[in-house]
Amino acid sequence: MMPDKNQNNPRQIRPPIIVVMGHIDHGKTTLLDWYRKTKVAEGETGGITQHIGAYSVEHKGKRITLIDTPGHESFSKMRSRGARVADIAILVVAADEGIKPQTKEAIAIILKNKLPFAIALNKIDRAEANPERIKQELAKENILVEGYGGNVPCVAISAKTGAHMDDLLETVLLLAELEELSADPYLHAQGVVIESHLDSRRGVVSTLLIQNGTLMKRNILVIGSNKEIIKIFEDFRGTPIENAGPSSPVRVVGLIKIPDIGESFRAFATKEEAEKFIASLPKEVAKEKT
Image 1 (cartoon, helix red, strand yellow):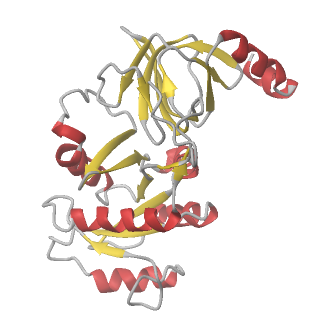
Image 2 (cartoon, helix red, strand yellow):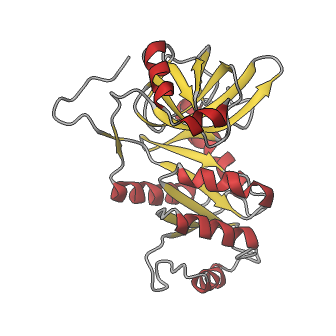
Image 3 (spheres, helix red, strand yellow):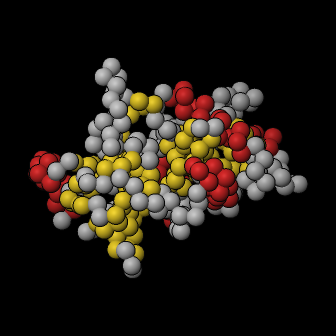
């Protein structure tokens, strides 16, 4: 069911979409796991049986969507695509190691995409941690944090112990407020494919991120130039749902083709509308997908 419409202003504030980036072994996965286990709405984590790349957490009644990005160098293309669908980035840097090659790569992606971002100085629980040295290293990369002549927020955390993890969420929520993020939930959904794979039991399983509008189970999807019917529609926990709004990560099962990661999708009320849209696509686009 679509939300109640406000005639004066159909656009509504939407939850921020946060991409988490960082060098391998700097604790990005530990950070995401801590939030998933402690901040998932209603505390329901049992439904998450596999890594799906995106999920929502709640902090003081406010929802935040987190997108994971692979830390290995070979996944740089996917990581770049992940940044493009996000509103804000968290750059995780280990306080005991500092700037590494993939840290520099992540910085380049963040700056290229003009993303507001915060630094998460992780592993401050370690004896070797030296946050001040890391801030100096960041300055050499032209990243000036608060207190070092700049305005980039920097939060010292321990994803292992949970120290200051709430402070990091408060920081990204503040950045989100400054961005005045909004969406129109009365439109048919548009968004991007975050993950997709072939499951031996269920068929094609895809994780979609809704960037605008509302996606309903009965909608027809156009992914690239392919028309698709949603057979199974779930939230990020794997719970069956009927609809989902802006900034929501959802899982759809039963697509005919495995979509490319980073590919865009649009939803339509009828097959006829979907076919009309496909027919309007440039021939080069349609040809690429056949």
